[in-house]
Length: 252
Image: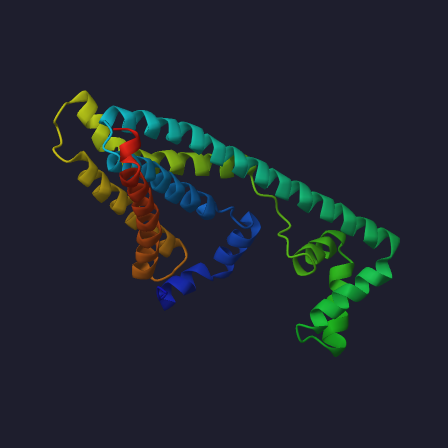
């Protein structure tokens, strides 16, 4: 984990900086969507490249199947993410309505839930009584607390359009790398002597960059993150190449 300097912490924790950060609210992050899209895009496209190369087919077939995968699978993933995020937002809205209804119908029971939740966190006596009173006198705060503490749900929705867009863009950008050498050779014949080898290197570089980005945003171990991503992608590509090589007699 990266160490933060005392000076940077002081600058970000002045009363003005804290006020500005809290009033702007939590920022929506789409790291999961981008990492998921980039890894899946590079793996599935390179799996096609590996399978076709293993079967000894022409570069034109690599390009056709690769581009079809980029557009169809990329859109499919984005659409699935869009619908999944929308369903999660709808579920969050239904749970919010349920909590509001329970507060209206039986406030004493809901107040007791808040009391027990924070008692389990170590609050007791007057501190617990005051905390329960503060939370339950603010309807919005009360519901938000129940959403997070009882149901494990963030009170804020995720933008399904941004989630889908992040997945699609990262999928297409990362997935285009394994095809780049074959596309170049198609328009400029013999520009690259070993397009598959260069494709392997470009894809490995893509995996490493995705792992590096994941490690950066999660404050994790860079080396471990890169190795983890390279291993996942390498296993998928090796399986695809082995299948293509084993079935080459069917297309010969």
